[in-house]
Length: 491
Image (cartoon, rainbow, N blue to C red; front, top):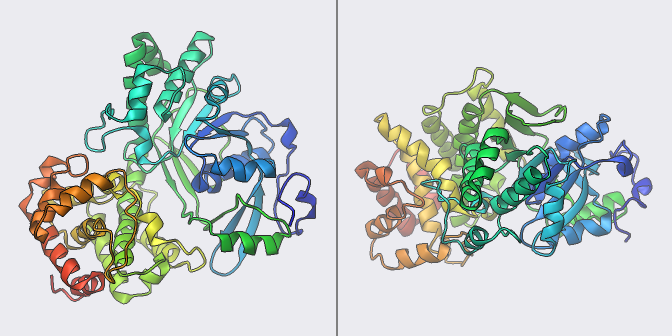
């Protein structure tokens, strides 16, 4: 079967949407660090809207900071790929052409620096996951012991980290008399713009204090909140799309109809007319907080409890009445900690979230969501728990989700089947847990991880007791029994 490419676009079925602009006339106003499925189903789609509307300044140079996988998928396809939107009733296919070039940073660091320093570049977006910022989740300080960051602290000739590339490129722009770009974090981090700015300024300060002052005075790091469920693509997905299109697309992404991008109104240069799905606002934090504590918090709980029960997909977990009860209970607890903007109807948001979780065609894997839990839990669950305890409120559902994360670290589910614990702290956590001879001891070991659990929360007896109680249930009787206990009020 032929590959999707510029040459095969005309052969696609008539109902497949495709670029309505001349790709050869596009200028690349955006550099994206961390090209993966989420970017291709979210930010790139928004920029495709701008290009289709006739503003050809917003093509994308995308970069992988690690592996050549996405480049090798997209290069034979001239950067084209298909977004398959699945709503549970029908599929809608759209070929996206916004990505003009994919660079593998370790292979071509100079090419990435040149793109970042180009006069055409006005915006840099990032989806590098929490660990890509090289920041301690608890303190926000640079993790100077990280080998890649240590290399960037020593020299920025060939950067190895996202902050390193930004600082090196901003230095080039300053030397060339160009303005800085707007740097937009699109990762699920609380205060992601502030954190990205802090990482960039801290690294710049170590190399050139005058550069740090210039970035602080003239640069822009808006806060953002992004939301779209993008499950991992499978070989079966690629085969099914090939049968639909008549060409093979190794770079396809599948997603849901919902797309949201809330961006703080803080830019230091041109920006596109973002169009549908994007809201530019003075305050992102209330939106971000609602998304992290409702959608992401529930997703983590579903992932660990469902994964322990041996259930592969989110919609399959939610088919269990006790799991739906758990999610509603977690949302009841989290909702009291929110300060939602006037435009957000929390009750309607919760209904929409449950409908999104129930979408059977997405096949969102619990193990995909379970990745990097040590980096995600502080903002998804632990901050909510701290707020509830400070208000003298209960944490039954929230603490069950955290206990399930601890149980997941053992590397075996309730049936005794082994799974990979995909987490940057996995070796340290495994060592700590191995030294515990009881659920209480294992909880104490986890509470000593200050990079995950803030000391003030770790010292809360109610939190320790709740985790210990739930971990005892999970270890003795499994995740389904714990969910039933919560639903029936036995905890």
